[in-house]
Image 1 (tube, rainbow, N blue to C red):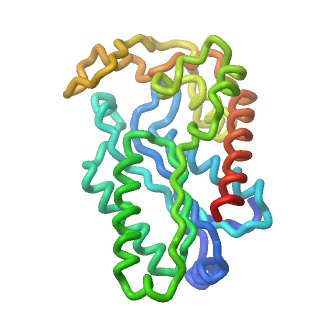
Image 2: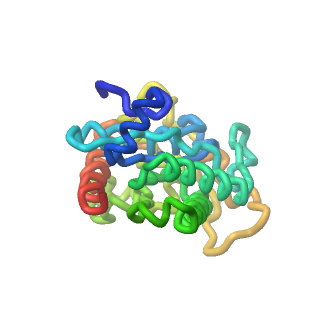
Amino acid sequence: MGRSVHWYHLTWPEIEEAASGGAVVIIPCGSIEQHGLHLPTGTDVLISQGLAEQLVLAMPNRRFVLAVPITYAVARPNTPFPGSISICGTTLVALARDVVAELLRQGFDRILFLNGHMEGAAFIMEGAELALQQWRNGPAGTDRAEPRLVWCNWWELLEEEMVADILGDRWPGWDAEHAGLTETSLMLYLCPGLVRNFSSGDHRYQRLPYKILNWPPRTRPPSGSYGDPSGANADIGQRLAEAVVARLRQLVEREF
């Protein structure tokens, strides 16, 4: 990527200069939870961070800083599987609030959340809203322009028609895509060395139009993959990633 834009690679003067220079801070968001027999527990984080890195490469004339990802999230449905770590929703709200408040305090006013995990979305957005409200009520809110915070789930940038064209009749819909075709293909493109053999596994489970607490075994597949990853490949992952990045470029140009 050339000169690193990762927050934890930068010195404090470099971060100070990035803030004063109008850099867009990208916060990749994900989870630490099981992703079937073939994908690592950090899949959601790795995909969102990988797409963020692809965006930086695609826009060399724009200034970015890649924040340390928000990794731990609400992931309760997958806690029956070893490796899944779920935190309380109030903890995630507080974490997001404090991180965003710190970014605003340091002068960053353009923040893009690039999310890879649905269950954490509402809690992180609530935390960001609280931080923004805190900023408005503080001294900085009187002499600085309103910060721009944008939330984006990467899969919502993909048109259904395009996904159906790429995946054909194997496309089960987003509600069945945990460790399925799209995530596996993206990982084969972004982090191929972390993908294990995905040719086997029981992906069957009972799909219900409602939720039962505490998530009975019949509502989760034995393999942990809510969609069959068979047929996933790096070429599909590249097409998906390029489509997401193209939409992200439009988003950055429009909103920042």
